[in-house]
Image 1 (cartoon, rainbow, N blue to C red):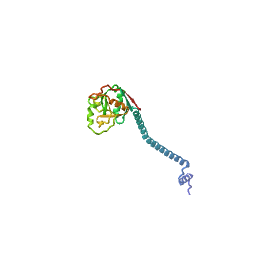
Image 2: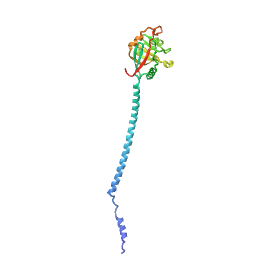
Image 3: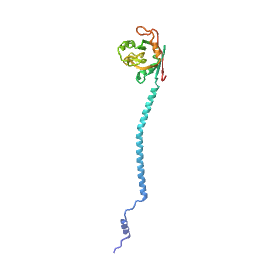
Length: 229
């Protein structure tokens, strides 16, 4: 009987052994790797989700900042004009919302001294007084046409300028002394007298010629702009 060599017996014993067990250290190592990977994925998700949610808020804050800047600019505009006339002062509240372009032009002309020394050229009792000359579109021209209508849409003591002012390159002023029918067809209304109605009425009572021109000179000395009164 042949003897089996020790080396052959060793190899046979190795082949008969079962699979080796995984050590606890290896399990812990791989578990830590999985935890780190999961933490990285979670952190990345949180980062991008927070960033996407902050972007609309950033745009909103910028928009709100721009709106606040525009509102502050609007609030800085004068809200009132004081017409200092030879008969006294007339305080006008400017209608910035209803006629912004006209109010802006009026403010610009006031700052340039355009109305300083402007005379009242037409005075029609119980109707309107006009400062400045609009060359063919004055109160005398549309007085009778206005009286043919019956609708009364506006109160007295409204401030406006003729719609033909850009064509004639003038900016005249009309202050109504009674409700005028269809006023918007004739004037761009951009203000209202809030104090000094008695001054308007005093100007209204002066003597005029057949063309409604005052026999004595009455004019605007200057215009003072104010934010509040």
